[in-house]
Amino acid sequence: MPNSKRSRRGIGEVTPEPRPRHYWLRLAGLFVAATSLALLGLPFLGGFLLAAGLVYSPCSDRGITPAHYGYAYEEITLPARVGGNFRGYFVPGTNGAAIIIIPALNAGRDGRLREALLLAGHGYAIFAFESRRCAGMGGVSLGYKEVDEVADALDYLLTRPDVDPQRIGAYGFSSAGATAIIAAARLPQLKAVVAEGGYGDFAKDTLIPRVDGSLSSYFEAAFFWSVRQTYNLLTGSDINLLSPVDVIGQIAPRPILLIYGSQEVSLSGGRNQLAAAGDNAELWIVEGAGHGAYFDVAPQEYEAKLVTFFDESLAKEN
Image (cartoon, rainbow, N blue to C red; front, side, top):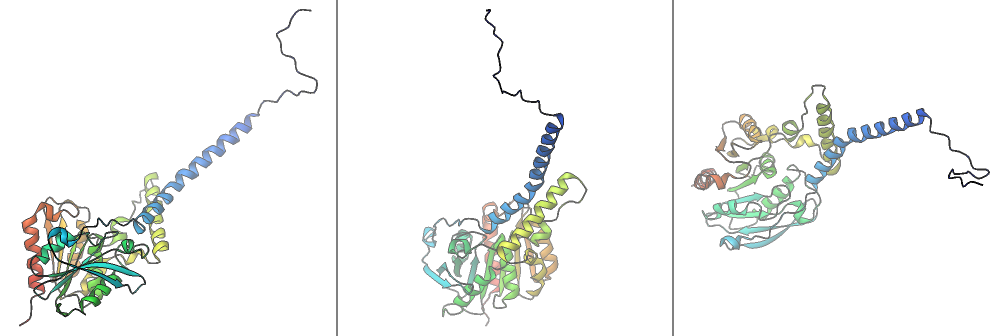
């Protein structure tokens, strides 16, 4: 019998039926639907990750102390009114006035130590403390709830016999600039405030999407909505409270110095605060400076501006 190369199927084997066309159409439809849902959900995920990353950003303390700049200091640990403890550096002064150095976002005690010690070099006592993230006190609120630690620092300075209780000011950069303004509005014992590079109104300045009906406007709106809701959920606070421009008018007649770079995106927030504050506020724009680079761009002018402001604002009464 000739040798056949054709395959033979055994008894009982069933030839598979080809997939009907509607099966592949249904499968393709499911794939498109799943892909579309994933794409539509991306802005919500992105907003969640951004807000969570800000609220729970890791501590950025570099371990630098005032001794690095040649200044003697005291290690201070204070109880926080919200629970827990936080640490600070106290640099004694010679003129009786003191400045509270507020940490930005996730900064440590050394966050703006270089700029702060310019004041120490002119006789001011300095108290620089760490953020909630570095103190292990949970997430940050981007400037609003941190006023509680400013109040704790103020209470501490009021106990020191070498600090005049009528000559205490505050200094903050970025989110701490917003904290400094909100704190001064809430704490009348703060007699002068310097706020650098802070937002004017966080939600209105950064979380207002375009509304033009395009796909990009949908993604923007969904992203910003997610940021708002995630922030409110994680902090237990309303993101609309992050608004120095709403409270800066309450600081008058105490003096305010706003410092911004001409190249930073938050400059409009500085201008809005100046307009809302009144005659007690001054805005200094450092030409060519980006966010936080004021001292680097104009070191002599920066030191003179900072020192002159506090000298005039916290002058000892005769």
